[in-house]
Image 1: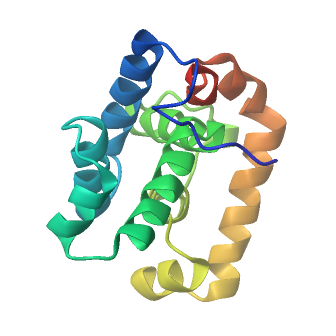
Image 2 (image 1 turned 180 degrees about the horizontal axis):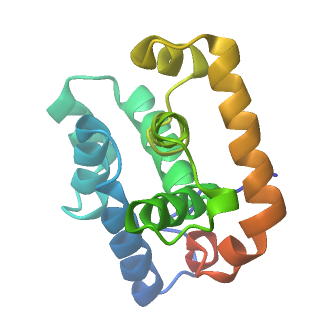
Length: 162
């Protein structure tokens, strides 16, 4: 399933829709690693141009723009929203026992689905094999697709605001 990246300045988009999109992105940015969150906040909360944000982090504007697009696509994805909701349910003890995630699965979900790390980087950080991480990711995506995907799609989708 592919998703278009929301565009804040899209032709025909209202100021209210742009403001709502920026608010949702900045709210979800707190679940990103610090440097990614700072970049999203600089562009969507503080209103910096990508070129200005690139100068701030001392990176080329083109690679910074690409990074912002990837971050926004991840933040806007139903998978990201679902993962957040599941992790909150796990922390509150509200997950049914059959769907309860182990601590290891929670860590894999956070690193792969929320932070956007590769399987290899996740395996290195958690001292697991890539195969083991892949098994967790496959299980997480299967849960998303079979149990909660319709629920994730019922929530306001950031892509519709563009």
